[in-house]
Amino acid sequence: MADVSMIVEEAYRVNIYLDTNILVDYVGKKFPLLNRSIDYLAQCPFVKLRSSHYVLFEFTEVRKANLLWKMADPAETQPFDSKVKSTIKKEWKYNGVEYETLKGGITNTVMAELDYFRNNLGIDFDEHVLHENLVYPTSSLCLATKISREDCLVMVSCMHPDEELKLDHCLLLTRDAQYYKAVQENDADVKKVFEDNELEAPILIRTECLQDENSGTQYNLYNDTAGTNIEEFWKGLILSNIKRDVSSQYVGQTYSFGAEGVAAECIYFEMDGDDKTLQNSTGLYFIGRDLTFRTIIAGPFEYRNNGNEVSLPHSNPDFPKYSFRKEGLSPDVLAKLRVKGNLVFYNND
Image (cartoon, rainbow, N blue to C red; front, side):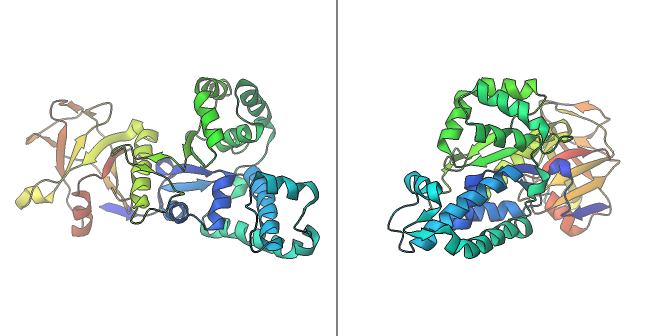
């Protein structure tokens, strides 16, 4: 029998770490595509949103200054640019208004925003703490590249949440163009520092220049283009990252075939992983192409290739299409698994 559930195993969840500027822009609510993106990622069971103590500290100070600017000058006669930020941080007053007079309202707002991150977006800042083992790799990264010390700490702490834990993958979302450029220009040095410290390097994604891997379409989360289906972009990115992160178990994708009779009771998939040799497994793990379901089907399976029953392991790289029929599947589950584009993985638990 199939087990259909939205409780997704850790191995099939994509880690996405939010930089300070993403959280600041999110609470600012000026960029609908950004907010739609973060809201989608927060509710997607195949994603784990992450951030850190360091980002929490940065966010608190940025919002402190931003809210002082807003409250002291509701008309926003001057933009909240680097000059205004510098002016505020010198004496913590703006437009003749002292921070002390607005402290209560600012504190309540920031604390409410942090609670929203935890309770509504599921971000637990306490999972990425500041610990001793961050010091050396962060210093090494800063010395080896043009990346600022702050951004170096974000990159390292992103992949090394605590002294005992290192992540095997993570997408790091940022808006910072200078940060992104510095990482791209120092790519080899970045990778060497992470390798020397036995860490995987994060994949940096800049939210002003997202690109669909399949269509080549580019998205900017700071341009609100009417009708933009940004959720489809994220679905594609999540699926491609799951394929990469669990590549050792990846089999291929389902395709649609057979309209009636026994053929309409079978599930079809085409192998498109690096190894097109079909192996024996205790089960198969399916992820819906729209990320709305995951299904585990227990073996054994009687596979067919090009109409012929096969023994495992079996390889036919010229025609790597297989089918099998499984008794006991509900019509709803069978219908979902016969749709084109679901991901298929071996499941040997």
